[in-house]
Amino acid sequence: MESKRVDYLEKLLSHRWNGLVKVITGVRRCGKSYLLFNLFKARLLSEGVVPDDIIEIKLEEIGSISLRNPITLHDYLRSRTSDGRRRYVFIDEIQMIPKVKNPYMEGGDDITFYETLNGLLNTGYLDLYVTGSNSRMLSSDVLTQFRDRGDEIRIHPLSFSEYWSTVGGDRAQAYSDYLTFGGMPRLLSIDSDREKAEYLKGLFTETYLRDIMERHRIDYPEVLEGIVDFISSNIGSLTNPKQIASQFKEVSEGTVRTYIDYLKDAFLFSEAHRFDVKGKRYFSYPNKYYCEDLGLRNARLNFRQQERTHLMENAIYNELRIRGYSVDVGVVTINAKDPEGRSVRIPKEIDFVANRYEEKVYIQSAFSIPSDEKMHSETDQFRYTGDSFRKIVVREDVGKRWFDEKGVLHINIVDFMLDKELI
Image (cartoon, rainbow, N blue to C red; front, side, top):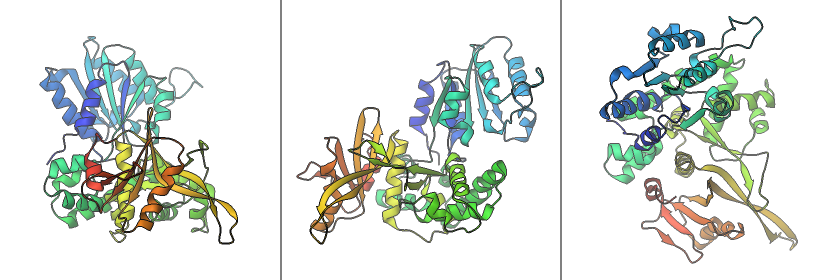
């Protein structure tokens, strides 16, 4: 089975020949290469682009070892395109190209692949696409190193909509499978649950962690793995590096913070900051962490911790990110009375404040609301946002969507995950 990745494909097509380097980023094995070298290439060929006008370089392959040098790569591509014909250039895993000493100027700045790509872009007859899987490809580097000539396209594992449209069948069962095994595209070709689990476990250990350890020369690999386990066990819970560091006697809070940054830079985890909705400011700590893919998280924990409430919250967070929203944890402060009758100010949390351009949506993740008391605890904080942006409660215990008397939309989790027009 194959997911068509329609939204990403259309985005690539709409960015053709825009004068920028298209930088496709995302966690390794999430489908970046397949999108570029299979789906995008097939579309170009179907539109009449001749094969010779598409140059493909896969730096992970042994045949491309010599091109893992920015100068060699530059010279190779210039020689292949010296006739000035308009061509597409695909380069996979661009971060495998290290910086090298400048051979033309002693003491000059090192040469990196950024200079190579900028130089090729200056020809005017090459449309460049590269993929990257680590911190070198983050937005800040794209904008800085490419001198405002980089165009980042972030790819995620399969959304539930992509997953279900491929596997079909009962929606509820597909959702349950998705919460367990996640959306890594390779799983579509694996039938056995045991084989899926083994694939995900190996992917986490042999690809992601080994890659981080080798690239950053980790001094405390057992601490890095411990941090992964801690965050995976506490997705959606407030935490901070100091709290995590207390679990390890041999390392400092600074080391823990650095290791967390490595995990974020590898796109394995995301950090959601707490935001004062009325005060319009961010809190430093604590924050929440979410895993990029639930299957990877579950495999890391040997599929032991299957709390659907936490998995559902992580799934909603990922879905919002896939739809292009920046996501914070909302905090509103209300006036109340303590047991002695004294006035106190109590912070209450809104699970997600999702922002995209001028749009804002408040979302609560509530597995079930069996009582009026639970309903009050899940929706009361919406009254204190001080604005009229949409409020949504995503639940697993409702059928057809409906609005309550306060104008809050209640929607089933499967409907939410499949309805891209909702937000």
